Length: 222
Ligand SMILES: [Zn+2]
Image (cartoon, rainbow, N blue to C red; front, side):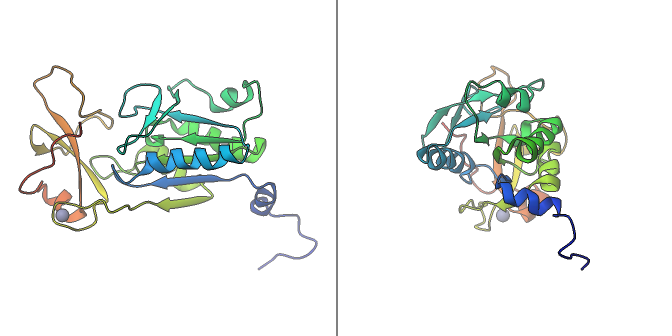
């Protein structure tokens, strides 16, 4: 340890002093990420804090955060060219926090902007998303969050593989078969009129690797 009373304040401690943090909550589909995101917004708004709710590719495919259990909140749809710092600074009132849902689909540059919002503008950022894609490889934005976030929390709200083990991995299922290659982001469960049926299913590592979808795969969510 080289610290002493004469040492300048370590950047991490200076950061803690001003209180703002970058937190990343991740987990598989259906583990309650969006529900927690809206709960977080509610808790902070109740304290009189002002926040913005952002999302990208929400299951509703609209500018809203919607949850499997039926909650909904309007949200700003994130696009590749949206600068989060400009967004925050252009608001008529001070922004105290950001709720960033589906953050796995954001750009790496936007994750960098989150860190700058925390460090330079004292805005809390709460990010929620998948860690890995259907191949079990990290999304670029999620990787950057693992590298930069002050706190990383794995959510596990009893999402089980068909075999009963905890499900940590998302499988992309194309016409009933687990996919091993393809575009990183393909939205499933939408009616595209295509002959190709794409859905996602949570599996344990063993069954993701074996490609075994179980005796009766769950039907697509309504
Ligand atoms: Zn399993």
